[in-house]
Image (cartoon, rainbow, N blue to C red; front, top):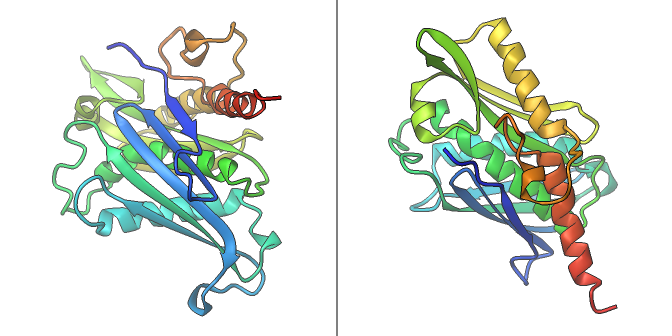
Length: 251
């Protein structure tokens, strides 16, 4: 299977303080960020800003699945946003899922963690890009990836950015996010796995999220030679550099 590099654009929505559109691994997500703005009494925090995350599915209305995703994202994003700089305020992040891989929404009425985990990196990455677009102060940026442990002729192999077929055959599924300081920010797992398998998953995810590209610029720089996954840190940096260069082109 040919691996396609991720794509992103900033300021996709003109009426939001910041926005981004992100596409990768079959998912396309658009995010808008507004704030910091004055919080309503029920959301007011005396010493820090409230991070309000709203996830909207590609079809229908949100349910238990979206509430689960919102809680995971809110907890993670609150750790990198400088919330204590904006007491009694709210930072609202709205994530609209535009498309997803085939079978990603099968049995969405059931509460199944295996249906939640694959979309988290796309939602998380879009939210981070939108926060940067809105110039929301953060202590660090962050990148995320999903990794599956799949049985292959009696042995186990680690698959980064698994397809829906790989996810259906996986014995375990893992989502990890790392900050720009190489610190583990998010870890969600589902299924049965050993400590050795977890160590292999952690190593693969850390390489995807934290490696520093050393190749010439271009798509090849985004994709690792051993198909372990894209270089997400370089992708995030190059997306911002492209936007800044575009904004300053008139000068």
